[in-house]
Image (cartoon, rainbow, N blue to C red):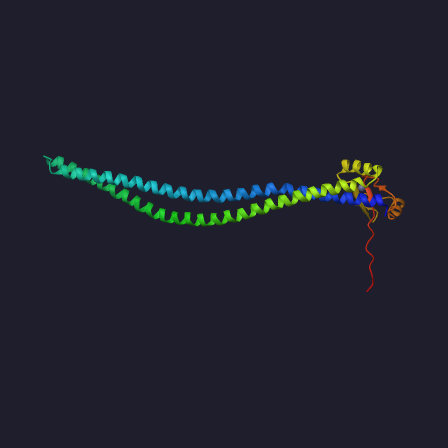
Length: 240
Ligand SMILES: [Zn+2]
C-alpha cells in the first residue's frame, strides 16, 4: 500500500476515535444532571411526607389547645350555674354548656383522626427516609463512577490528540493538505471503497479508477465527495 495512504488511514481512524471520545465525554455532564434530577425527585417525596406529618401534628396541637380553652369555659359556666337567678337564665346557661361540650367532642374527634393520620404518615416518612438513604448512597457511587469516567475519557482524549499530531507530522505536506481540506469540508477525509462504491457518499466509481484503486498504490479521490479512497481487500479464506 502507498505509505502516505496508509498513514492517512491511520490519521482518519485517530480522528474518528477523537470524535467518539469527545461525544462520550460530552455525555458525562448530561448523565450527571439526570442522576441529580432523579435524586431531587426522591428528596421531594421525602420532604412531602415530612411536611404532611408536620401539618397533621400542627392541626392536632391547635385542636388540643382549643379543647383546653373550651374546658376552661365549661368549668366557668358550671360555676356560674350556681349563681343564676331565673329559670330562663339557667336554661340559657345549660344551653351554653351543651354548645361548649359539642365543640369539645367534635375537636376531640379531629384530634383522634389526626393521631391516626400521623401514625400512617410517620410510617410513610420512615419508608421514604430508608428509600432515600439507599438512593443517596447509590447516587454517590454513580457520581464517583461518572467522575472517574470523565477523567479517563479526558486522559484518553489528550493521548489521542498527541497521537493525531504525531501521525500528521509523518505525512508529506501535499497529501496531508488534501486530506485536511476534504476533512474540513466533509467531516472525514478518507473513505473505504467497497464493491466500487464510496462508503461515505455511496456513489459508484467508474470501472477504470476502481480497478486502479484496488492496487492502493496512488491516492484516488471520490469523484462525488472528494474523499481519499482506499480498498480493504477481503481476508483470504484458507481451506481447512
Ligand atoms: Zn464519496
